[in-house]
Picture 1 (cartoon, one colour):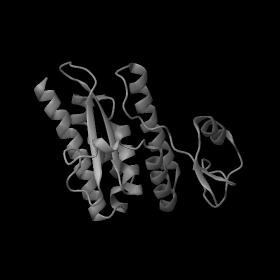
Picture 2 (cartoon, helix red, strand yellow):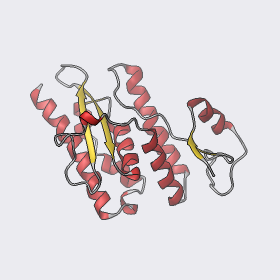
Picture 3 (cartoon, helix red, strand yellow):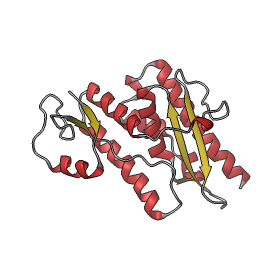
Length: 196
C-alpha cells in the first residue's frame, strides 16, 4: 500500500469523509492509497498573533489526533508522518553547536529570536537522522516555536509527552534524548531572557 502525506485540502475532506479503512481504526487514515494526515508543523514564524495562533492550533491538532489513535502502532506511524512533514534543516545549520548532546540519534536544534524585547519570541528549527525522532522534534517544535521566552521556560514539554503516553513507550535512550531536546530549548530561552 502506497503512503503519502495529505495536503491541507485533503485533510479537510478526510476529516469529513465517512469511509474509513477498518484496519486502521482512525478516520484520518483513508484507504487506497493510504493517507496519513499530519497537521502543518509550526516552523520559523513571524511574530504575529496569527502565527502564534497557528502554532497553538497545530499542537492542539496533534494532541487531538494522538488521543484519537488507540493503537500504538498507529500512533508511531503518526509520529513518523509528523517527522516527514517537518522541513529539512539546511546542511550548513547541522553543526556541532546546533547538535543536541545526549541523543542516541543525531538531532540538531537552531533557535531564532524574533524580536529584541525583554521577553523575546523565539522560533526553532530542528531535524534528526532517525524517522521517529524527527517526529518527536516536530512535536517539540509545535510546543515551543513561536512562543515568548518566559512561556518556553515555564512549559515542560515532557509533561505533554507523559500525557500522550509517549514517555512510557519510548526506549530509555530515546526518552533521554527527548529530555535533552526539551532541556536545550528551555535553557536557550532562559539565556535569552537573562540577556534581554
